[in-house]
Image (cartoon, rainbow, N blue to C red; front, side, top):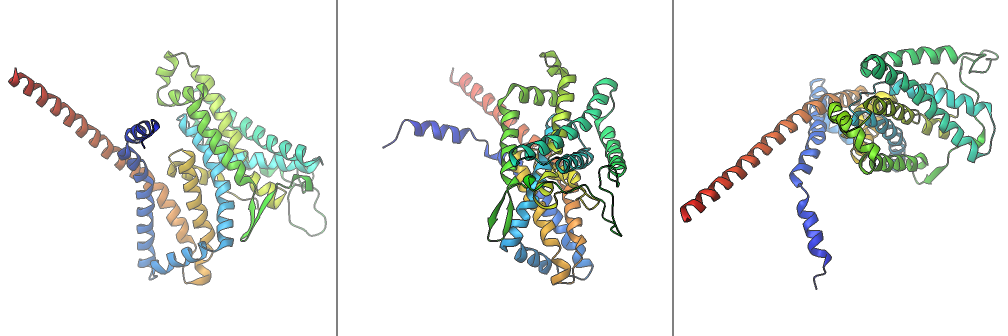
Length: 384
């Protein structure tokens, strides 16, 4: 028996433009394929078997402990990608997530080490501190853009360098780091209280970050805000055409500043999975380049939560399995960096190729429709 809802469901399925979906997937897939080919050529030229290298990575990556490590890294990369993508959707290139998350993590670790509160107060305090510092640091670039017309790319790049210097000035004994005793060369903030420990999920492969749930919530919120709220509509409209958005009543300068602050606040969360789960302090060995990885992940994922999640898993998989290459074969670990770098380059080229193909296909469809209409009109005239 056919229900009344089945025709409607078939209609919705028919309205899905599968060719458009295919084109959306074609660019990142093409970028990854080209990157694999280039990496294989580099390995082959150096006298090594690329198939053996990929087999080592795939075999280790299928182990449960490697899968947990991949998910943990992917959680951090996903948050970084979401922070960058928020600015990208506004057509703002927030290249400063690197400095924003490092400053956010430094101040969060300092505040977390200075107080000892119950978990339900300690953890939110640390998270809010990181977001507040990241947002404030990003707001500098936002103010420069709306008040003086300074490109956010230049401003955020320079702010990254300044943030590195600020971290170096604050992370010294007697300021944010306790006075070093004896011959220890370790300079880091005071360890945070045990109440700051974020929960983990025990699995067969090890401890999975509970922050993976936070990442999922951020992804859902990102999608809902951009596609189901007036703010998201204004943000996307401003990103596509500032003149058109302003003509429709949108305060463009306020949107630019707000988007920059939100992007920076999200960037402040990048270092939190490691800080609240493993390190519990900020030191000289705190992980670098997470903000830059977020740029690559956002580009590969086309600034969508699902795409960013897949790109994060790919980058995390490459990082986790890379360490096995010199251990289980005569392969340089740097080949993974070559692969990641070529993905970033190839994704730009692939998007342009797919865009041009999409325009060509659209022109062909319009031409076919016009020809069909002309033929129908001529047939009517002959019949008349």
